Image (cartoon, helix red, strand yellow):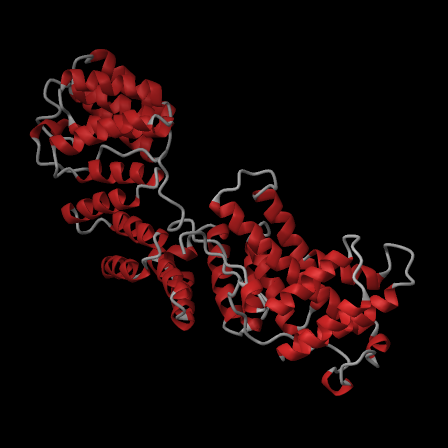
Length: 489
């Protein structure tokens, strides 16, 4: 529950919902500077850093004020170089006035020049001691540089000096989140929301924190509060989709993803964001048994954003349920290629990397099953008559197609101990170890006793194909390759 929006699945074949939505499951970026303009505080020493007013602009000429206003417009349009040039002109004329000094620091922070910004904020603190916004900005810059000790020191000081300045608590919450101190982050976001009940970004961040801890019951009220403030919030609808998915309420998950896709924000969003939402809804559709709808969502996602490799995974699972095994194999190959590119095999084995490897193994199993189904279709005569001691009536020509719904079970070894041993022995067979016929017969009897009809049928098909493949001399023999696919998975 604390990982991305993906799961590996076992027989019935897997479905893993896509990874968590960028606006919510990705932790708020520590590199996002805390803007100084637009924040309100009860402390009078903050005034010059917050909104232009008569007191803040005392001793500034009208021309200087015009340049400051023009610089603000340029910053809004992200023309930071031009804005900085104007601000430096004003600072040169008024080197001891805190407003232009701080505005220069603010612009440098937005440009990512954190060392220069820190030096400029130090000048601000010299001119206005204990300026809380300057302390918050310095903490944010240190956080962006990776100096988290210095960042925490400045932010702690800011929160101590003014416990009603919400941006200080938001900035410290981001630092706690980056350090995985979730409980401290929850407290700071809660305090920021207490100070500003209409802060939708903090509400979304708090819901994200609850998601990371698997506390979806606490996330839902946060998203509901956001929707009361903005009844068309794409992020809130998407977040509710995640919650209801993990809680097993798939119909509600689909409904909220649909609302997110139809929101005005989604219509103006990038193709990548829209493709991500479609991929998530398609995954839930497929898990719910609506493979055609899942297939349509995945194809639309790939049309919008061909690099969305997770959509290939969803489409592969939909193809598998529909019996389109060749298309399934093609999409799985595309998914694995994208997965290996994003999560290289030599990556440090973090929790997310390990989870992605489990998903990859699950998809390889689906690929193996698809390859075996194709093998059965192409060599139907091989399966016309099953050899062995098992009653023929229990073994039709082809293995049954998979169920129309998928599960998220991953404990194959514990849930299907006999079947797990079969696959283990098949793996041993193709790793050079000898498996005698007596042992194969013993496995056959144990499988029959397990009353798992599908696995029994599949095993008999493997046994038959194995005998047929004994005469194969080349590695390219399709029967041998089909068996190796299963063994490797």
